[in-house]
Length: 308
Ligand code: SF4
Ligand code: SF4
Image (cartoon, helix red, strand yellow):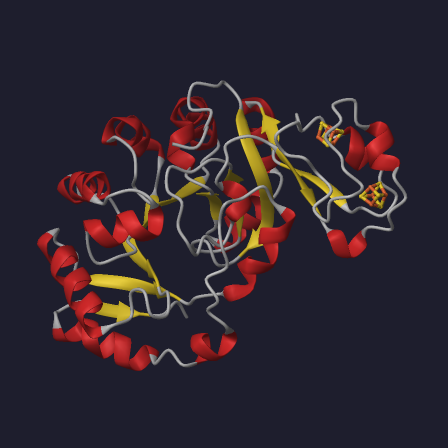
């Protein structure tokens, strides 16, 4: 598992998006937790996989001034490398980014205490109240921060904030179960036809994920299953049939399809990641016949839809 600070009283957050309208009802603040127990080949946020803050390099901005190399006490900057950072040596102290005149270096991820993240979450409270919105927990995998959330979520509840969790379900249910009284709605991402496909494309099998989904269904949790559509990986006739049968077996009769976005591949050169580009270009994305995908799911008694 990638390092994720589940025992930490602080959480590493890599982004806070305000006025979000795609992560649940109304106007929301989406908190992106760093650290994930899956390694999806198409991860839209590859900077979320490691649980620790990390330095990123934007080569197109660099003017090769050398200020970063002078600032680094660890010898973790190489002016000879096109990627600039020697990640094995880097401690993510941020000194190089502070000296960079071109904003070519950025530290991704910052630690937040419960108090600080509650303060951030309440800033747009009047917009939540006016729109029926709230706070969404995204990532990465927020549930890996269960100990932090056990303190954070009750604070939001005392302020009457609607909370939505986006999760991929790859953890023991015991991490999520105590948090459920403080979560109003769940987006549960189910991605691939079977255990073998999960192992190939995410690095982990699907049994634990299905166990969590089954436990949520048993508890009648309010949830929507979402399927990130990945052209050629889960869009074939046989793949859809298997996914539909699995979801039906867990009592799921409707799913929300997420359209694939290939823009994440531009992030790869900036990061210390083992991810490779999938090479799914816009032509392949445009070629996905969503009406056909929806019709195929309906053949297996699953009502599939795209978010409006
Ligand atoms: S973040 Fe710190 S250790 Fe890493 S390259 Fe920059 S100055 Fe060096
Ligand atoms: S300080 Fe910034 S602009 Fe200068 S060499 Fe380093 S990354 Fe490039």
